Image (tube, rainbow, N blue to C red; front, side, top):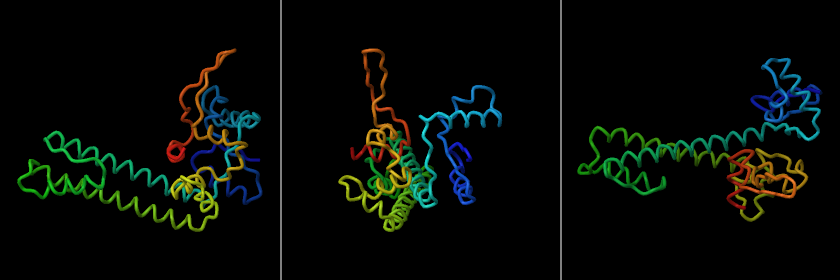
Length: 235
């Protein structure tokens, strides 16, 4: 039996070792860390893994297949492109506001308005700023194109997955949410109930209770924020 922390290339090596006949167990890194009480050494890390493994309340992380990792990677790239596009749009709108030009929100409306101001020789955009703004608009269009391409790639992969097709029969779950669930969760049966799944996503309330007093707060926000965002939208 081989123990790993579920980080970095752990899933890759887990698949390799399973192919050699070994039993591989991946443990969540945040559950192993409390057992490494002293200085960080290989000996301390190995002992922490063993102690965490002996704790039956700590559940192992399922080893992801290569198909799951491909799907998850596409979602990560899409999320990164969206963040970069949003940053470019916000920077452009902020710069234009400083010179008295206001353009509407939304990538579909920013580019036409920006191009119109750049091409208008009588607009108040300084000549030295026009090339940079033109390049910024090209970057935003590039991110738009990459986001569309990745969605098409996700759709092509989803067409071959029966679990994705089944998930899409649930009202409110589209192609992105269904593929993200398959990529990041895998086998849903590892959760004994829907509440355990909600707790994994960080959608259950925080609790601070003592004796007869029970206090429930806002959602815990544990787990993957991207997946929680997709599921929270439809809940």
